[in-house]
Image (cartoon, rainbow, N blue to C red; front, side):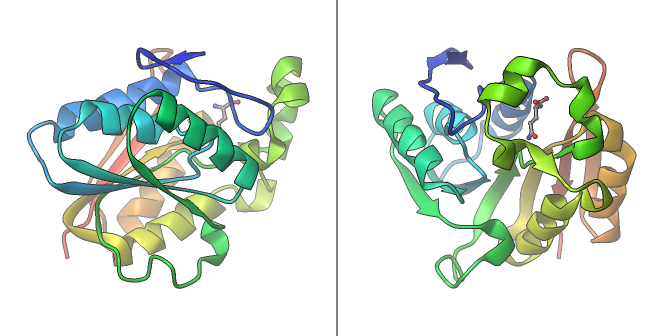
Length: 208
Ligand code: GLN
């Protein structure tokens, strides 16, 4: 498939990159174009589409990409090689992070984590449900922002001063996702809609 003008191979270990996610990548690229020598971390990289598009379009960046799934990382590594970018891949569960990246600081952390509630399953297309990894899609109804909470806490420790955190979000959870970042003291919190007028993207900046 194609994402942000680049070719990606996919299989049933990863989600097919979505156009909404291109909008998130576009936001990050436009906002960070003039910076260089920055570290970027993509959490839950899947096919690698976000990490690879950023590595390809931003100058002098070191890109790290993490995923729980070894099979997804195999796909992402192949995509990075095919697109001729250098990315450091890390196999890990963000919900149970060990010491591996304890001392690393990032200027940008980005994630498109699982955010579909099981109650929303009925609204999904059969091709998604049958062929895409549920591990990458679903969260429990009563803890829908689990990944956002964990990644925001992680980001408080691992973002450099004025570092940016970007998320793709569940369209039905725009306000609560925004409130989560504000409550954790992120600044310049901004919610954006996608081309279909659905809340889809969120940003916060770490000031302290
Ligand atoms: N937007 C995807 C879908 O509708 C879900 C992506 C995700 O859970 N991060 O299938």
